[in-house]
Length: 249
Image (cartoon, rainbow, N blue to C red; front, side, top):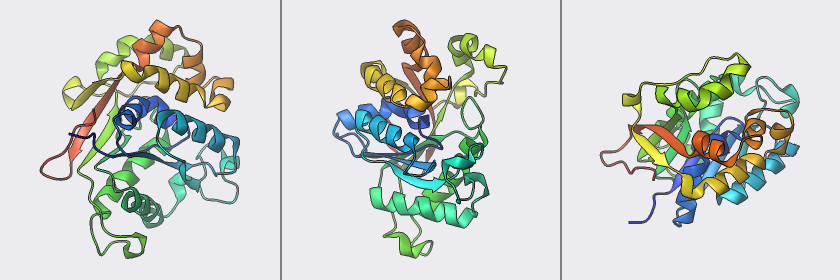
C-alpha cells in the first residue's frame, strides 16, 4: 500500500523540521506527496529561503507561506497582522485553500499545548488547522477556494511525559515549562532514525535560528547520540476524520 499523502501545518520556519521532519522525510521517501504550510513570516525574508532549503531536504516541495507576522517579531511580515490577530475566517480560509489544493490524506500540526514551548503562534496554528480540516470538506464553506476535500486524519505532534527524561536536561537552563501529555494520549510513536540525517540537516538549514541559539542551535551543539535521543522518535495524537484513517508511518 502506498504511503498516504501528507500536509504539515506548523507556525514558524523550523517548526516543521523539529516537530515532523522525520515523517515528512519518511513519506516523501516512500513516494507520497508531501507539503508544508507555514503561517508566519513573509516570502522575501532570509527565513523563507532557509525554509525552502529545509523542505528541499525533506522532499516536501516549495514553501507555502501565509505571510502573517510572527507574534513576537513584527519585522517578520511588515504591514501584515500578527498571525494571532488575523480574523479567524480569513486565516481558516487561507488554509482551506491549501488543503483543497494539496488534497492530503493526513494533516499534521501542533497539539493543543503548542508543543513543548506552548508558543502562542503554535497554539493558534492548532486551532486554525483543526477548524480548517473540517471546513475543507464542506462545499458551502469557502466556495472560492477550490473543490471540497476531506482529509482522513489529523495528527497532532506532541511529547509524552516520558520525553522529559531526554529533553529535561537540555530544557532546564531555559527556565521554561515543558508541555507534555500522558502516554495514553499518544496514538502513534514513530521511529524516524532511518531518516534522522535528513531531519537534522533540515533543522540545521534554519541557520538564523542556529545562530541565535534557538532550538536548532541547541541541536547543532549536540553529539550524534544526543541528537538521536532527542529527535529520533516522533509522537502523535490522532483525530480520525473519516471511518478509516491511515497512520503516518
